[in-house]
Length: 375
Image 1 (cartoon, one colour):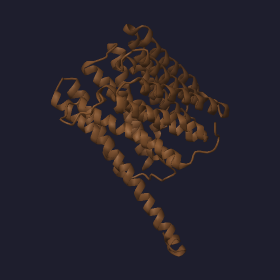
Image 2 (cartoon, helix red, strand yellow; image 1 turned 90 degrees about the horizontal axis):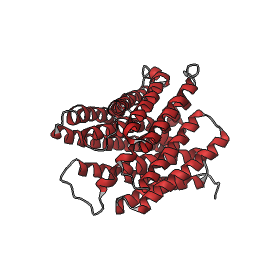
Image 3 (cartoon, helix red, strand yellow; image 1 turned 45 degrees about the vertical axis):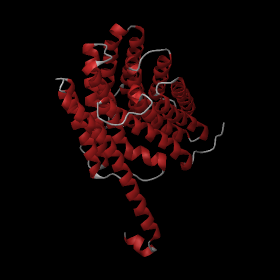
Image 4 (tube, helix red, strand yellow; image 1 turned 90 degrees about the vertical axis):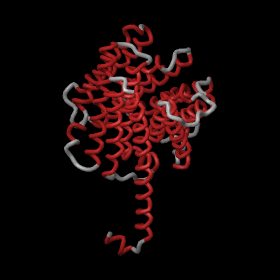
């Protein structure tokens, strides 16, 4: 396998595949909300969750890790998850799509194995546990479990991955024994996910406890508690993180307090607390930091990035606290549309900020030296 660095031209098609999974996943969300939009031949509604979590988020995570490793073969991991998402769009929950998604998780584990040789530590261990959770989810899906039954493993994938990334940044403010507390919370999370597969009747309660332990560590140890009092980008990132942690804590309470759920209003609430309230909020918050590293294009902070973030949380609150809690279908439906608009609005903001920064760089490079110096 090649060890040559990954050029931007190799990254863009993979990122485009992840973007395609996002857009089709959002379209599937409109179908699930009952909006009168044209229905495709493939049953997109059946693969909405895997498209969003593995086809989109999984591709982003694997691409960022491949870039961190810096070798071209590592690009196979996000390429497989992107291709798996495409297969799900074309053929529904077919065997090829599920196999490609499982292969992506195996390749991601190989990436973490190479990164471990460079710098082992609890943060990387957590991210590898996230990749292992991704593998477990796809393995159980291939074994015949339904998507609702593998949701705890999909949750463990995003939570362990993001918690590991936050641990990397928490070393300055980390209290004594903070890393040990982190590993204990991570162990509880993975043990809880395992319990949901072995003993479904009680496993969800244990998983909820593990999730709450992880959120408690994040709430106490994350640097966002301090940077939220700053200004500009640090405050924006902290706002996205802390609100995401609040939604994740509510999901943990639903699991720990009410047990297993695979359909109905509580399932809708739990699912979207994790994958909209937490996961999308993390993506919104980290995008100005991660995307420039992946694309080698600046993504400057702009105050209007708060608009889609605020819309996401406002519409999610309406969906969960009114639509799901009181079974108000009209609120649930239009709040869901608001969720979709928030994500699309953020994508638009990212494109606008990136293109604007690119034009500014071009003008600065083309300006005479004296003019450029004055600017």
